[in-house]
Length: 372
Image 1: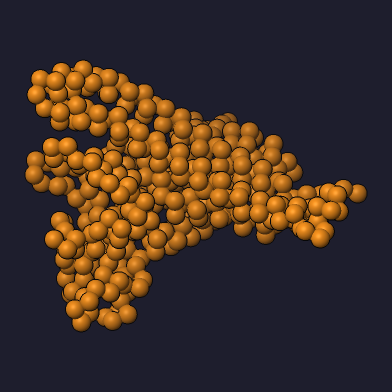
Image 2 (image 1 turned 180 degrees about the vertical axis):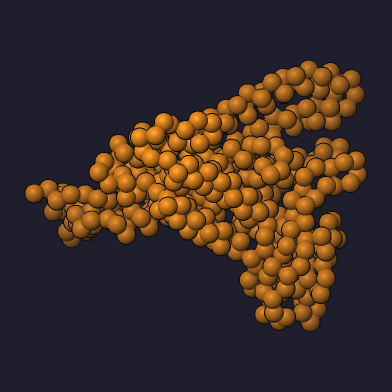
């Protein structure tokens, strides 16, 4: 039950942390240049999957786009709270890069401010001051959170009804039990030793949340397909959790080694060189966790999509050469895409494992014992 409470708190906090940032975070990071070849918008193909948006574009059926509209919740200092739907806004921007909506609201479309909700006040466009819309990233977070809770509650229900000396469970419950014990025995216990039970709820929650999110991200159809760990806001929150646990639970000896370590005095006085380096290291650890997870998952998605785009680029060359190159590259691209997706499954586990192991190691390093 302690693990369940930690999981619920962890998930709910992340749900409320993402909406204010996720609508603009990934879209602002999209490359500024658009490569188009005879109607093929490579930027839209490459980044349409990884960027956040106010609607979930599934696919195109002919000239019709299959889109899941999402609720837009925001506060304007001029007109108060509003709850709208993304379907109420125009799908295509006008000449001024604005997608018109009801009540004088627009979604700004230029590349440098893509996705920002603005309101027309006295002829001027004023950004809303508080946006907690259920964007694609937030919806994916809800879906993954529900799946994670089911993965926890089903085995927990079995454990509640059975004794420790009962035969091991089979099927899905047995798989989860094996997975949990593997993470605990191979990642958490070696790093934390006797304190493993104290921090296992957080570390197990982090591992399974990241692993499930990574796996759902490579599923090519809803409810999968959302690149949640490719959103730096999400990885920043996960790294922040580890940062707080490491430094809030750190021992006095840990802080002593940072500000007055066992090094020659001239490295501490009059210029506090080593204390500065050690203090700076407090922040580089969570930054490394954040960037590693974000960059690896984002790069994996972009590479997999890029391999598929090779087919369309070759055929777009036109003429006999385009047909020959397109026909030749089609099986090659499909083969490489399949290999990349299989590699991505391995990367999903590795990135969850690395984040959990490093978090456990950082927590262990902050629990320095007195050297007697």
